[in-house]
Length: 415
Image (cartoon, rainbow, N blue to C red; front, side):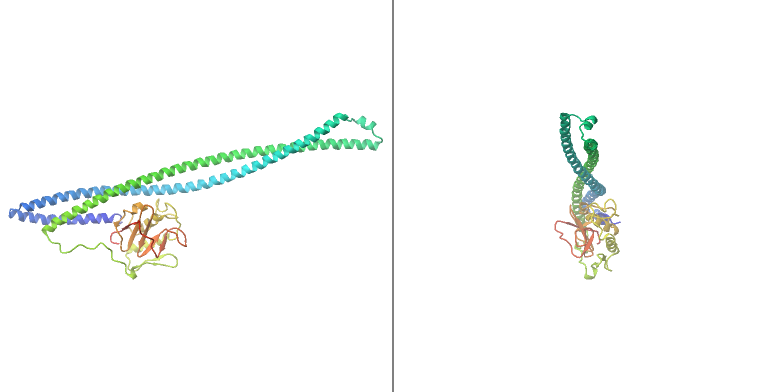
C-alpha cells in the first residue's frame, strides 16, 4: 500500500544521506586531529546538532501525520453517518408528506360532511316547520276521530276516503320525521368518525414530524462535528507543513555542511514530470468506459479498471465513504475508490483530505485536484469526475478536464 509514501520516501532519503555524511565527517575529524584541526571538530559538533534537530523534527512530523490520518478516518466515518441520516431524513420526509396528504383529504371530507349536516339540518327545520303548521291546523280544527269521520261523511265511500286520507297523512308525517332523523344521525356519525380519523392522522403526522426534527438535529450535530474535525485537521496540516519546511531547511544545512567536505558529482533533478506521449494517453470508449494505454504502469491500469467498475453509477452524497462498495458515489468517494484499487489509498478521504494526500503538484500519470468542496482526477490524460453530462451525474470518464483554478494538485510518488 502506497498511502503516505511521499513522506516516507523523503524521510528515508534524509536518513540515508546522514550516515554517509557522518562517515565523511568522522574521517575528516580524524585527519583534523592529526593536523591539530579545531575547525573539523567544530564542524562535526555543528553537524551533530543539526542532525539532532532534524531527528526531533521528523519525530514531530510522524506524530502529526498519525494524528491527521486518524482525523481523516474520523471525518470519513462522519461522512458515512451523515449520508445515512440524510437517507433516513428523506424517507421520513416522504412519510410525513404522505400523512399530511391523508390529513388534508380527511379535512376536506370532514368539511363536506359538515356542509351536508348543515343541509340536513336545514331540511329538518323546514320539515318541522311544515309539521308545526299541520299540527296547529289540526289543533284549531280539532283532531278528527273515527266517529266524527263517519257522522260527517255523506256515504260509506266518503268514510273510506276520509280514513285513507288520514292514514296517508299520518304515514307521510312519520316518514318525513324518520327520514330527517335518520339523515341527521348518519351525518352526525360520519362527522364523529371523520373527526376521530383526523385526530389519528394528526397524531401520526406529529409523531413523524418529531422523528424528522430529531433526525435533522442529529444530522446538524454530525455535520458540525465534521466541520470541526476538518478545521482541526487543517490546523494540524499547517503545523505539519511548517515542520516539513523546517526539516527541509535542516536537510539543506546538512547538505551544505557535507558540501564543504566533498563535491557532489550530480546537480539537482527537475521535479516537473515528463509529459505523456500520445501513445501513453487513455481512451474513452463509445460505451463510456476507459481503455488504459499498454505503456501505463500496472497500478495505473488498475486505477482505470476500477473506474470502469463504478462508471455511470449515480451520484450519492457520502457514497463511497462508509465503505468503498456503494450503490453510488460522490466526488471524493469516486476518486478514493480508484486510488484504493491502484494501491495508493487504504481508506476513503473527503475532498479536504485529498488536498494533503500524496505529494504536491501534478503527476505524470495521476493527478488529483481537490479543494474544500470538490475533487476530481486526471488519469493517463483523461478526466475522472462526477460533474454532470448527457448521461447524468456521477462517476464518469471525460476526454476534457474541468478548470483546475482554485484546486490543489497532488499526485502519488513516482506517478
